[in-house]
Image (cartoon, rainbow, N blue to C red; front, side, top):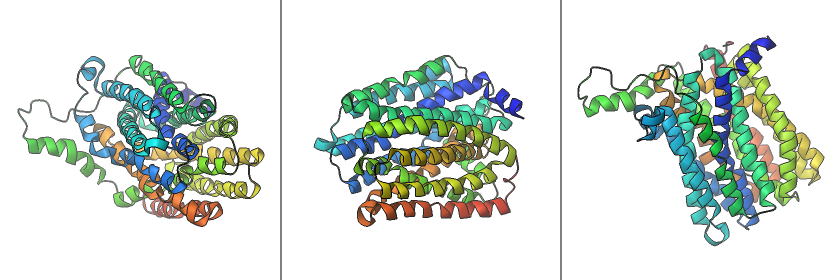
Length: 425
């Protein structure tokens, strides 16, 4: 059995997915956890920091422009490199410039300028995700989705580690401007990967069928905008599936937006936080992602989500322990290990679950829709995280983060009993 899994993970296309996952994960912390640490250091209130979560709105709305990515190529670049690769290259260059520009702003003197730059970074990042997600699904067979989900999460978490723990450690020695410029330069990893990769062997069918002459705007609208969504509606209990995707990781997102401000407030230095996350967090995540791939293949995506979702929610209680003991690095190491282990397992199953719902002709649009709903939880529904910590204190905040996992798990329980998705792939 292990030989089968290793043969899946060792394919060349998995290496491509790994590096593209890195490029996809790199910008996220720069507008999330790393940004909140920067804001905390600049003296911005916790309530205001919580409101900065709304910057991630492009991740929630990317399905609005995803049909254009499915229908058209990026000018010049797509003619040179193919539809998918042209779009990826364009978004990566834009990201590098936007990240560097964000680092040149000053939250203390103009928080709204920093917010505008962060919003631009989030938009470019969300656009990159649209194409990378579609590219990944299109180059894999259905039986490879579990392994592909694990590999893309490997890369994604490595990218977040570099722009999270790596950026924090770097910011202890150089300015935030240099730190963000350094992070932006790392988009070269994705650029080189795209240049050395090929377009999907079986690209999505053209939106306009061959032989059709001068289609009307109504026909174009139907094929480009309407068809991807009506196709998804053929899934049984599709409304509940969408609601589940939106709520499943709500508790984790609610906790994540305030983790760094909490750790800094109780006495940890940025370097200490980075060191613990690097040593314990990365190792636990890598193990979790691999275990998640095995569980997804053996048990099916829904059952894996059920098991790991409960475990991941309970690990939030370790921060409650941390609040009692203070800046104890051993407790932090244990908490980060448990959280990242369960988080890695959950992430693999979640990505595989979404991938399996997409039709190959509308990959970019449908995956963007589903991942956008997942982003709603960490965007709009987490904007009150800072207010909750301010108003009720950290202990209550962590208890709330655990309870917020209940609605998603309840929906998963219903889906596992009333759909055919709870079977091994």
